Length: 300
Image (cartoon, rainbow, N blue to C red):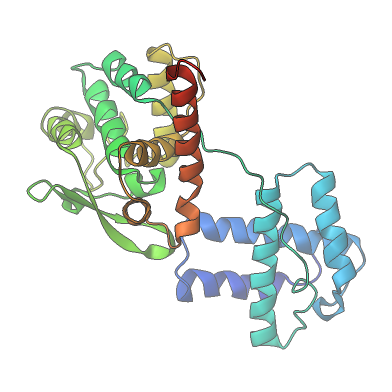
């Protein structure tokens, strides 16, 4: 379907968030997708001028999103994308931006993050041990994700020079291109050393680059590649669960809090800009304490 209005302005907006705001590739793609969908909706509604968009159009669009059974978080993200676009339009093209300003974000569904229990992590590590190149690499990936709580996108962007074994830290580039240093435990450092000594050189073959983790052909390992590896490790451990990379991030935070870490420290380690993003894990730890009490107290 041909989008009649907003296409040129969208191109300018995408350049703006890429070059001036320095948003990640993934974030830019999400913004572009959200706004294109909205422009397509306007086209279908017969709106031919961005200045013609009113609150009723915004309300109708959000209603359509609910009809499509989208998650509230997805709807909220789309509203934010369109608001940012209209803020840019108002500044650069003097387009009215009031249509979405009075639109409320849907209340976020209170879903507790899924995580692995400590004994499950032990099982995952034990069942995936091996001396072949891929097994050594996979353990290094699992150890680093669990030891640091970093995002998979942060993991795949790590270069050799970003690992400092002497200080036990790794430099990662987080959301909004924010750089932070995260401590790495001895188990993860040992696994990385093993990988660098006995696995990576064999996998690299005739390729040459500085990224830490590589695939079976020696090429830069992608986020999809990491997801595939983790799922294969889960199957190998015969664990009746579904794994997604963020589960290890959730596990990292939950285990720290369960073992006495303070919320501010966990926030800094995760690279969260606000404490509210980290506070979801307090609900997980409270639930953990409740279950422990119910299982342990003789009169519970």
